[in-house]
Amino acid sequence: MKNKMQDFFDRLTPVLDKVGNNKYLQAVMSAMMGTLGLIILGSFSVLGSVYAGRAHLTQLATLLGNVSTVTISCLALFIVFLVARALVPFFIKGDDGVAAGIIALVNFFILTPLGSIKNGKSLTAALPTTWLSAQGVFSALIIGLLSARAYVYIKQHGWTIKMPAGVPPMVTNAFANLIPTIVLGLVAMLISFLFMLTSWGSFHQMIYSIIQVPLRGIGGSIWAMIVVSLIMQILWFFGIHGTNVVFPLVTPIWLAMDMENLAAIKAGHAAPNIIGLAFFNVVTWGGLALGLVLLMLIAKSKRYRELGRLAIVPALFGITEPVIFGTPLVLNFELAIPFITNNTIALIIAYVATNIGLVGRFSGAQTIFGLPLGFHATVGGHVSIIILQLVIQLILSPLLWYPWFKHADNKALAEEQAAAK
Image (cartoon, rainbow, N blue to C red):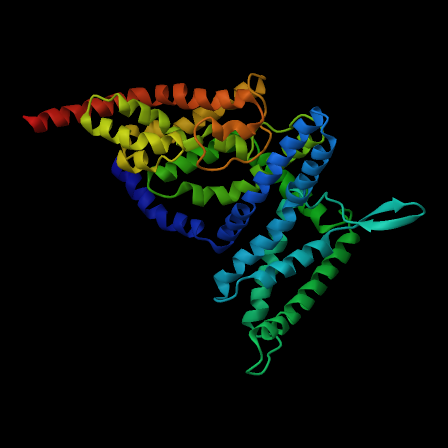
């Protein structure tokens, strides 16, 4: 049975590697990672503005609210630029993708319907933040990818203004980008006009209605999160980087749900979503491997005790590679069940605890990788979330690992005793 499973995944690995190395998925993941600093800054600003408002620090609350507006509430703007910029270098060596990013940003603005603000008797054109935040994330990804791919097509076919030799590179590049900018801008204008004639009214509304909302319904449930967790851990078990394969597909959905929570909290309302990217990262922190490391510290076998001492400090900061590859957990069928299922069990328990009100809903603020146990959960917005992470890592995780590790430890001890004779 083990050999059959191994053979199956050996045949599947090349396919999964192609998925993980897909240019478009890598561009999406790169764009999402590129916004992490902005999201963290905006997340803290939202939380700070809420507490500042409660303390009647009006000016500070206003400042922090403005910061969250230009970061989280404009998330789609950063994504559309970054995803286009990240995709172009995969196709054109030496092109940093900045020009494509600017073109994608312009196209996004062209496709975004303007509003108006009444200023006395006159109306002033204004750009609503409706499609600049979480609701515009998917349209930003699509516009960014399509703009970048069209830019690459134009460049590769030589449809550019070529300057004579000796002209400074800065001038050459500026003229080379004129035709892509104008052509793609005109295409965006045509698309925008055509959507104005439909019931949707805009490209963003169409994408939100037929793609983002249905995908959220599919991928935004606890059952979808459980499936994602199981797939990721199964891939990890067979030595495939499950995070790289699966996360680019679900990050836009879960991150948009977190942004909705932050927007609701900023407006003084309760967070609408239980799950999200922050929920997944906090609950499955370190892959629940800390419990295994704690058991190793009191192991009977010398092998596991020494590994536990080496792995404990990194594990307290969520870095569990020493125990994953030192045990090893990859292709270790004796520890396969807890390695694959522990995250899922923790997700179910955390979801139920949150759903019944025992644990507060996550604010949606994103965490920073490398923070120690407990501190990693502080951005959740509730003390109960910190307690939840401590209980999962220090109580639940050791209990889930114990029966399986006990068997492995006894086996290792027997091997050591046999070798000593």
